[in-house]
Image 1 (cartoon, rainbow, N blue to C red):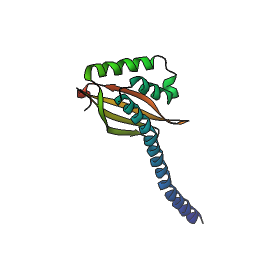
Image 2: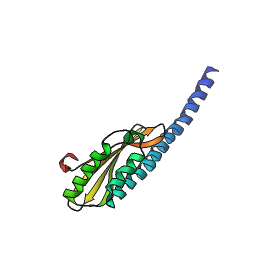
Image 3: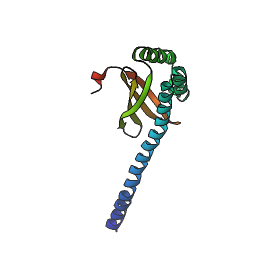
Image 4: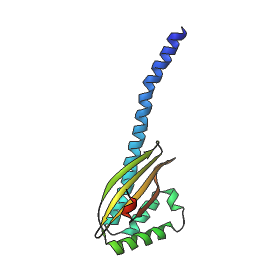
Length: 146
């Protein structure tokens, strides 16, 4: 009797394991979908030359960022300095996606300016209200990208 019960429990565990893996994949796909929409809207708005609206939209979608004082002004100053030096943004592409468990996803985008490429980093984190951008920033040092 114990062998049958044990075999039955093992069979149930094996049957549930793929479902758990499927659930994790579904959650990550949802994060990518939700997060990529926020990121692409941000980058499209920057590409349209509306850095104020891009930052405001990103901050409005994140309780984390909207509560931090001075972030808007700092990011605007940095973005405007980069576009002043390297020219307007003309294009962007997703360069890499890294996953850390089922709660954090990092995406790197290469952003083409008229005279330079910058690399943007966006960390998507799972919160109680869904997926949000927990960190974002950019740099202009290609030697550090490899």
